[in-house]
Image (cartoon, rainbow, N blue to C red; front, top):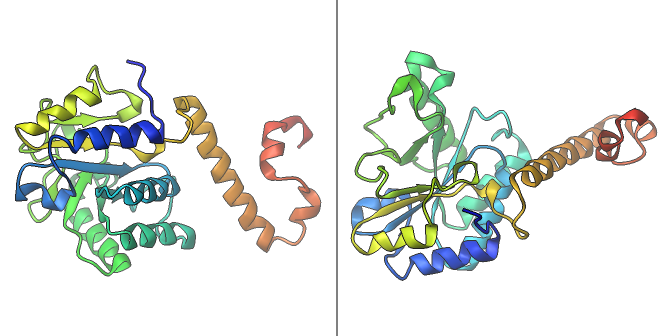
Length: 245
């Protein structure tokens, strides 16, 4: 299915969904029939902030799950921390997006550790968890002290829709959300996939790489005295013209 991943269509979808049930955060899923809106932040915290601003502007709430072991962003970085605080300030729930493969068989201890760190960063209790690399060891990890996005009560093929790799696995989102008129459903939308111009997956990743390079370029220019003379143009220009290096 050729789906429109523009921000305009995203809001159109959520407004349509609200005709069948209210949209709620993960921590609220057991308070009545609702549409649980969840975002796993795998790649780009800046894009998560953009989506939070978009949803806030349209009076939509959701839960953002962030990683402490991401290879793509660092919650101890000042800029990333700023995005996180801003998402919290807008009223969104922030949960733990946990990768059990980092810890192997000791993943339960890893959850304890990361939950405490994230709680300390936010100065707020962490109530919800979603798992990255969810099929770890052939089964879905469990953790009884947190609301689990993979709880069978809110996670099965009939009530769960994900945009993983920009593919809805044959489901039409506008039709799927109508199921919320009978029971709660869960929607997982990755902020990296959505944008103003309905970009392709390739264009999205190139755009993300561009942002990463620009952040690196900006940081080095502030600290390395000889950098400007060696790279008078933005670093991205040289990456696009590697023969000039």
